[in-house]
Length: 374
View 1 (cartoon, one colour):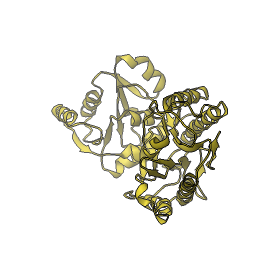
View 2 (cartoon, helix red, strand yellow; view 1 turned 60 degrees about the horizontal axis):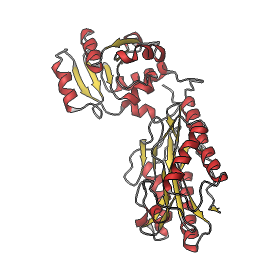
View 3 (tube, one colour; view 1 turned 90 degrees about the horizontal axis):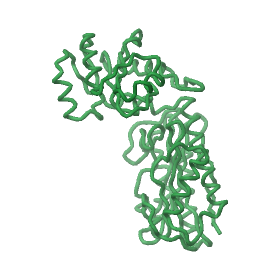
View 4 (cartoon, rainbow, N blue to C red; view 1 turned 180 degrees about the vertical axis):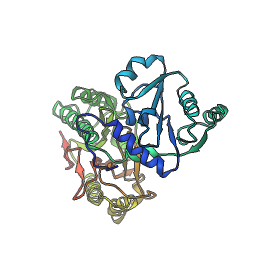
């Protein structure tokens, strides 16, 4: 299946399932039991909290694709997945495997990175005549490359986050005397006002020495003049997550703050410019990291450069020194280098981008120039 398929105004779930069938044939299984709820949403549009899906490998087998959920979702599954046979049974995975056994399916793959040992033992106890084959990560492999619908959702989520941050600053919400928690809650509410349906993760607001903690959780620490203030946050639209970090200085910037900020900005630009179809993920990390290492601060860049983003805030691929594989056209990723001085302060700058031939598409548009907020 072509990765550049554009399903238009809504996802073409049948096309996604057809793409999955190509992978099932490659892995020599007759069907796949899908139990990860995010993967089920990707393949069907169903958003309930209990479901299992059985997808067959044969091109002519769409009429045998079965989704199972429990009685709470009878109406919802009919509305969200009108094109598939729906079974109602609280033991969803067990029921679809029983059906696979009735159809004498043979080799059935299962998401071994999701299924627990106890669940697997329960599957085996069915004695349905199936050969259960562990196959991790097949749907995630498809999810890495975003289609036109997905990019539109990501773009809308990034727009909501950009607009929220701009409104926060315009209203004077980032000022000395406020606490990290106050700023975080206001920023989250503003994302809702600008169209977000949820927040991507707990918003990070880190002031002063707390800005040196990469994943600091907001506290009652008070913003003060001369502080770095690091904000890491994201909006969700259509189930798709944005991710952005900006670091500001309150009132006045010292020389060391300007130096570190410009260093991280140069590193982030190098990482963005390294994004290209076919680029090794560890090479992208290296392009950004070597800028910081050359300045003598390599030991203060303590995390990977970035990660995939989509229906989950952290998806494949990982962009890090230990990264494996290469980037594909249409993959959505973050680029987020940081330098952190324990007990003093730190800077991180992060964007969400889509890898494209000819250069990445930038989705988070808030300026990365050093900004001193008065």
